[in-house]
Length: 373
Image (cartoon, rainbow, N blue to C red):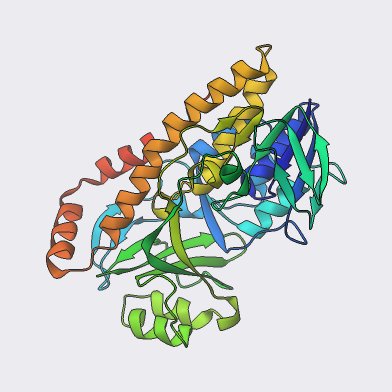
C-alpha cells in the first residue's frame, strides 16, 4: 500500500519504519525544518519493547538506551529523603531510559533515504479520503496516518477534536553530564505542589524533571533561580543536579492532555496515532509507550489478509480501549502527586507509606503489558 504519515515524532517514525520494512510505500511529512526531538530524556517500559520487538525495532532502540534505572532502588520519596514507597533493584518491570534525540536518530536511520520530508505543511481530507494536501498540492494514498501531536490538525479537520486541558502544573526538564552522584537510587520525590524525578541515561548522563503547580502560562523570570529556591534544600543529589545543568539546557513546558478522547481513532481511510489520538499527562510515563503500541498494532494488523476496513476497525476498538484507561490513570496520578494542601499531602504520604512495594510493582506490571493484536 501507499501510506502517508503526518508527523515525524516517535509514533510516526515507528509506524513508518515498521510499515516500510513490511514492503509498504511510505512517506512521512514533518512541518518542522528538520525531523528531530524536542525534549530531554524518557523511559520506555516492557510494553513498548514488546511492541518494538514485534515489528523488528527492539534491537535498534535498546542499542541507544540503558537499563540502569531497573537496577537501582526506586520509588517515591519525601523532600527529606525519606522513602514513601521503595522498590528494590531488579524487582520492577522492564524499564529502559534514553534521550529523545537519540531515539529519533535511531528510528530515522531505519528509513530509506527520502522517506521523511521536513518543512512540509500537510493537511488531511475532511471526509477521510486518503488524500494529503502537501504545500497546496494533493497526493493520494491508500491510507493516511495522522501522528501530528496533541494539537492535531487532522483530528480537528476530521471533526474528532474535543480540545485540550491544562493539567495545572508546569515542568522543567534537564540533562546533566555526569551520573556519579546518583548512588544507585532514582525515582521521584514528592513535596507539596512540587516534585522532582531522576532517571539515569546512557553515557553517564542524568535526565531530571521538576514539576510545580502553577497558573497556565506563568512567567517565572529567572528560572534556574526559581528551581534552586524551590528545590535547593531537598535531599541529595537534587541540588547537585540543578547546579550541574546549564541554564541553556533547561526546557520548560506547561502540561496538557486531551480534554476528552476522540469518539473514534479512525476517519474513513485515516488513522489517529499517538498524542493526536490520546495525549495524556506524563505521570505514568506511558506517552511514548502508547504511541509505540499504536504504531506496532497498526503494522501488525496491516500484515494480515483481512480487508483494510476490518483492520482499521480492530485498531480503533483495541487502541481506544487500551489508551482510555491510561489516559484517565495518568490524570489521576498527576492530581495525587501534585497534592498541595497540608491535609492532602499528609493523606497522600500516609497512603503511600502503607502501600507494600509488591503492590506497586504489580500495578506497574499491569500497565506494562501490551495487548498484542
